[in-house]
Amino acid sequence: MNKKRIAMFIIFLLFVFSMYVCTSLWISRNYIVIREYTINQFRLEKSFRAVVIADLHDYEFGENNQKLVEKIREISPDIIIMNGDMLNRDSKNVDIPCRLIENLKEVTPIYYALGNHEKEYLERGHYDLLKELETAGAVILDKNYVDIEVNGNNLRIAGYMGYYSAVHM
Image (cartoon, rainbow, N blue to C red; front, side, top):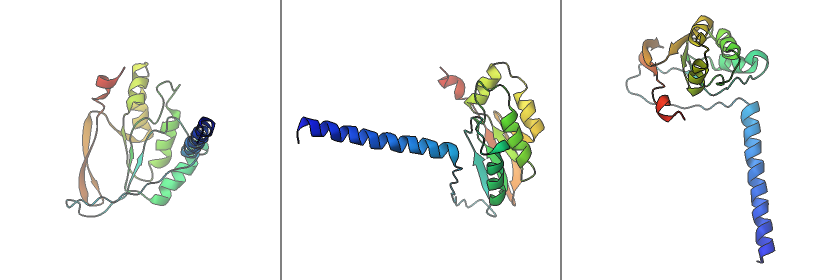
């Protein structure tokens, strides 16, 4: 192979890779991804369904996240965990995560662990964040835990962002 063919082949591979990355990003922003896991734990009395929502960054699937709410209702979970970064550090308010919580709180209890974006949102002077999330219907997990019962199982769930200050730049 001559140098021109090698260069064209490399350009072609870069193009294909770029298209793959762009398509993957577009899909992740426009489709709800559901991954199901089965965890066998000898301490559990009965099985249960948990929905974990993370890293929405103020994004909505349909108006007021209706598509996401409908999908979660179809799953019929026993517990919902919001695992941080539901908003952005520079969000103007917490309306999107609060509306989502309000629309889901009738489905099952919601537990909200803070992510780095929530921490930075707080640091920017939005000190009412935790109160707003609680008023919407979430139990806040921030350097604490709660003991709960889910479908006959005694569980302890916790939220902790202690590592955040060590890696914040």
